[in-house]
Length: 136
Image (cartoon, rainbow, N blue to C red; front, side, top):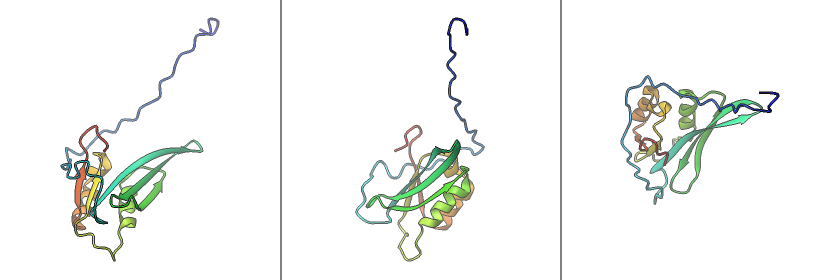
């Protein structure tokens, strides 16, 4: 191969997450209605992965659909339940009325976790998830 200048293409390794939670999917209550007339009616959240100095960093963000305001964010070296729970806790202002709040996410394993779902239930927030294979 070296003599013939043949180079093997190395495919990028894809990470697969194996779900141990059985179908904890909630209905899509947002239904692509990304404009709201009031603040704290609908928040959207997601986690993004970045590479920095050959290390992975995860950014979790919660955004209000009323005005696009970032309600809270958290950066971590690991993608886990603590990351999304800390983001949610940072986003909550005790002086705001959150009684009608809908939190929309993808169907990621973190958003299906019992710890996250119980926190939303305890806080009286409504959970919504996008359709499978559709991050909107």
